[in-house]
Image (cartoon, rainbow, N blue to C red; front, side):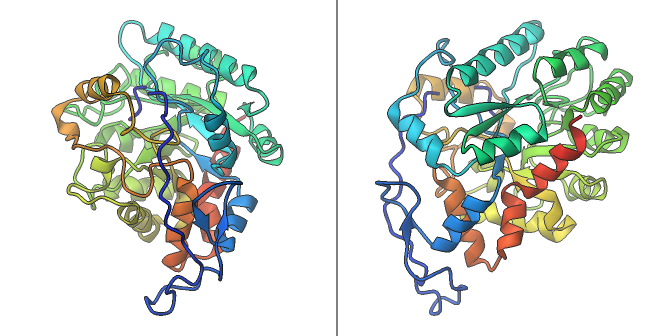
Length: 385
């Protein structure tokens, strides 16, 4: 969703989670006896099993901007000590940094975005490293850095198929074919009519396959999504979406699309955006995991991941004027409610909370690792040249 909000430090929940936490009384699997802080001085406590899984796993969030902020100086503003601490302790290695662009200035906006954020990563090289290949992502994990994967949530920057290779050389590694509305390639999720992929769009997909750029259809309409899966010679991604079978929202994907994605070895990232997860409140981390379970039941554990569609803190602590502007920039069909984030997945340690929820549901360590990053790691390794 991110159109592009300096994250004010969200107060992390302070209730301790212990490994034995009534594990037997409530019928939950044992997590581990005792609880531990994930970072020095942290009030949040997690089981040793959770900490071990995060430590060993290359965690990839396939839609995570470093800072959601409309301010023009966002790229040059120094990180605060708290922001640095949050990045270092979040457990995430790969951030797919992508925003929504479009319109007459799409090419200029895309170039500015790539230059600005790659410059930001370079000026903060003690914390971030740019990802151009799968080896870069693996090295970021070894060096305990944030690997920044550059993406865009539209493809209007491609005026011709030849532009794909140019943008690849400039650092772009993933692009959505459409945002929410029609472009020359295809239709968006909130369009009244979906005409599918155009002839020009097919040429763009072919060029992306050739360059080694990941095709993303998170915001694409239903027919456009199915066409893209069929036309691409490489597996593609739905980096950040949810399941329409559980929440009837235009940004969610049909079972038909999810099944088609799985048959072509693609991966779907599940988001934590409230109105995509559940139509009514309360909307919690458990509801988000229901979407993960739904994908697993449809196409198996090998084809699901996480695309939170937020920064580390989420949207709800944005400055009021920016928050209002964000909501006003989408069609009524987006059905915003009072809050955008979901309870339990709206703070820098959210991947740890997600892991604890999966453990409570009886997931194995290996399957949790696949969800947290293994599946997107495999997909990116297969697609990137």
